[in-house]
Structures are given as C-alpha cells and as structure tokens.
Image (cartoon, rainbow, N blue to C red; front, top):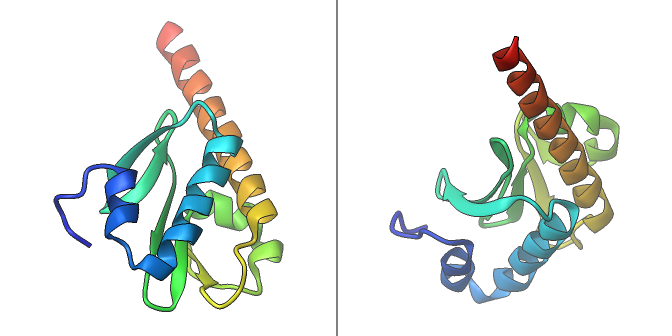
Length: 127
C-alpha cells in the first residue's frame, strides 16, 4: 500500500477491487461495535482508535489481517483456533466469509478493555 494514504476511504479505494466489499464490511462491523471510535491510518492500515489503538485490519494476497491486540486474541483463542495467526494478528482467508459476529465480539471486548484502562489512568492521575 501507498504510504501517502491518510484515510480509510483512500485505503479502500486503492485496494484491489475484489477486496473492497470485505474491507467495507470490516469497517461497518467495527463502527457498529465501537461507535465512539475514530478512524485513522496507523502502520499503513485502517485503524480504529478509542483511548489508544483499538483494532486494525488490512487486505493481503490470500487473507484479510485483523489486529485486535494480543489481549483480543487471547480472550477469543478458542473461537480463533481455526484461523492462522500470531500473538497480535489473525488471518481470515479470502475464500471464506468473514466471521462477522466474532469480529463484533472481539471489537466490543477491546472497547471495554480500552475504556477501563483509560478510566484507571484518569483515577491514578487524580490520586
């Protein structure tokens, strides 16, 4: 991808045509699960931000990458066991439908996690 991309709209527009629908679906699901989150490009990937990076997603040659932080992967490791992945990434194969409900649950988990961490940070500053 081009380093000059600054918005998710630009990222989707520059993606391969066959990937655009899935990328828009990622975006829609994340927006619905995290309506207060803002969009940005980070690490040259579409990113949702809420008191810190929430999740990233991206299109690659044979899969879609989803990056919900290591805690997001650990919390759903059983559900994610059928997908390739690593400590911080999940690979959803392009030849299968995106697991929308699972993505939504992971995003909601990450929202709770980031909100709680932000509240704890504020409480520490007050004391």
